[in-house]
Length: 292
Image 1 (cartoon, one colour):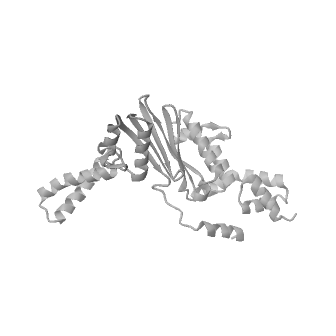
Image 2 (cartoon, one colour):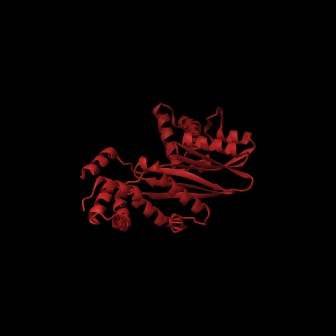
Image 3 (cartoon, one colour):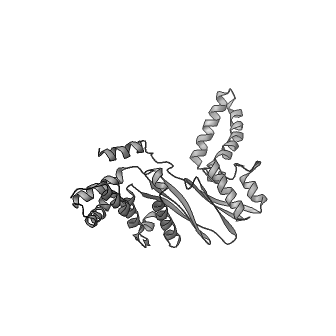
């Protein structure tokens, strides 16, 4: 039986699979729609395996909160286009809410949790087959707070950055202000004491070398380092950063002025530290259309 464009379109709408996959499935099934659907389902897992070498560095981060418990997570896709897909967003919500209602502590634990569509691992595999891209559940963290503490959550750029903060005392508005600060200013640590010793030693060595290159004697250079390291803290630690709504005070001071105490911060930026795709997605689509 001849495979027509309308048949391919119908199978795509039913299965959500790619155009070329639908065309091949219909050819293999001699135009039988049900058989073609079965063919696509049978190839679903194989399809996901073939995509393992591809890069999934786009996607979304999100936060889920229930009472004194919160979950922040990141799920990746290959293209930004797919991250706007309602099917993809729904999968993330399922993953987030499932973890929120579990005792999972590790990624392996989470992947085995049950959903209405099987385990989270099975859910991802099925969406890979339907959406047609490699999808990857990259990371999550569960955060617990006390009754006298507040969560602050902020999602930026529709899920490209997610920040979850905890503030003791104050209120949710203050905690959210702190989360917005972290989203905008990208602090690496919460407090100066959190900066690893090797990072601090390296920065001090660089600052000392800079001062000596300016012609300062070693003992003067040492004193200059102590002053300049405070500027370093203001750049990389949330507590010491100038508050974006009032540059005359630090974030820590802002929280204290509102009868609170900064406790913690987790900031996820989608794809940070990952290799990005450099290929032209439009060109890839055209190649598929041409059958290349």
